[in-house]
Length: 115
Length: 114
Image (cartoon, rainbow over all chains, first blue to last red; front, side, top):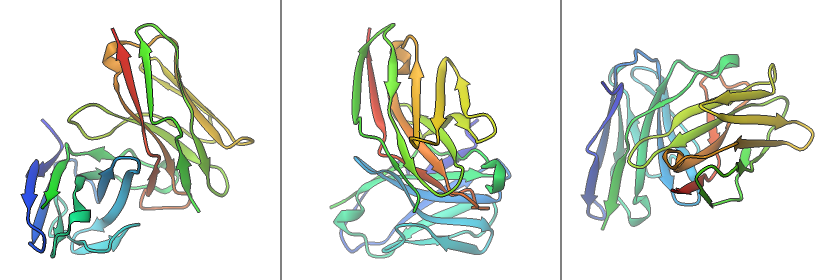
C-alpha cells in the first residue's frame, strides 16, 4: 500500500481561483516537502515542514502557502492561481537529514493545469 | 550555493548497450549525492546514494562514482533493458541541512529501444 498519497491526481483550475492540493503519509515521518516539477528544471522545493503546525519556505514559495495540521497531512494552497503555476506537484516525506540524509519518499504527483 | 547540472536532456539506447549519464555539482565541502529515478506516472524514488565515506554506490546494476576533483557524479550501467526507460535525476544533499534539503538536477530521460 502506497505510503505517500496525493489528491487530487489531476486538476484544472481557473486563473484567480483557489486551489488546495493534499498529501497524506503513513510512514510516521516528521519531515514533509512540496515540490513542483517543470520540464528543464527538475524538482524545486516550495515549502517543507518538520513538525505539525509549522511550515517553512523553500526555494520558490511565492504564490504558495502550506499547512501541516498533523504529522500525516500536508497541504499546498494556491490562493490566487496563475497560469505560471501550471505544473506537476509532488509531495514527499522523510526522517530528515543531518549526516545521514534520509531517503525521501514521494507521492505519485498532482498534475495542475491553470486556464 | 548548491546546484546540480545535467546537460543530457535525453539519451536513447538500444537494449544491452552501455549507459553513461553525466552530472556535475557545486557545493562547499564534501557532498552527499544521490541518483533518483522516476518511472512514467510515478514520483521519483531513490536509486542509490553516495557519501564521502565510500565514494561509490551501486544498486540494481547501476553504478555511480563521485570525483571531488572534477565535481562530477556519473551514473552508468553496463547493459540497459527496456524496463530502465525512465527519467534519472542527479541530486545533491545540502551540506549541514538537518531537514534533509535536496537539490535536483534537470533530469535525463532515458529511452531504451527493444
